[in-house]
Image 1: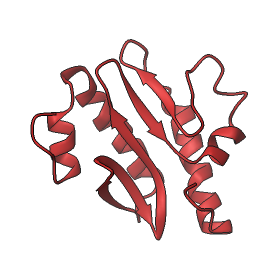
Image 2 (image 1 turned 90 degrees about the vertical axis):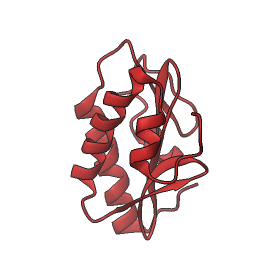
Image 3 (image 1 turned 180 degrees about the vertical axis):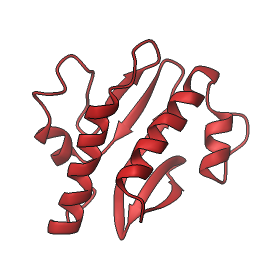
Image 4 (image 1 turned 135 degrees about the vertical axis):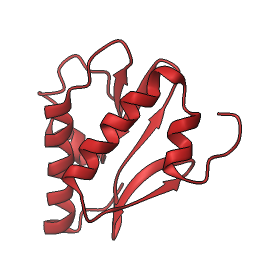
Length: 122
């Protein structure tokens, strides 16, 4: 990214070209799951917050990272199959379709966990 973005829209506009449409799709899914959440930039990445951070995402040259919490990803470990994951990240390569239904279920689980159990980000 050339200049430091100050809004999520600027972040998406400055992301690598192959990531921009995918970022918009991911953002729309997350908005639909958490319509009461606010969007911000934290650590230079877009986040959705609702009292606490719900999830974040980040664009890279070859993939997008979707970042719910470690506990949320652990809950979906078997469904994540061959997707590359880290402790709290799910890589979404640009050469594969977004797993929209799975992303939505993961995001819904995170929102429920936060609202019902006040689950922390880390």
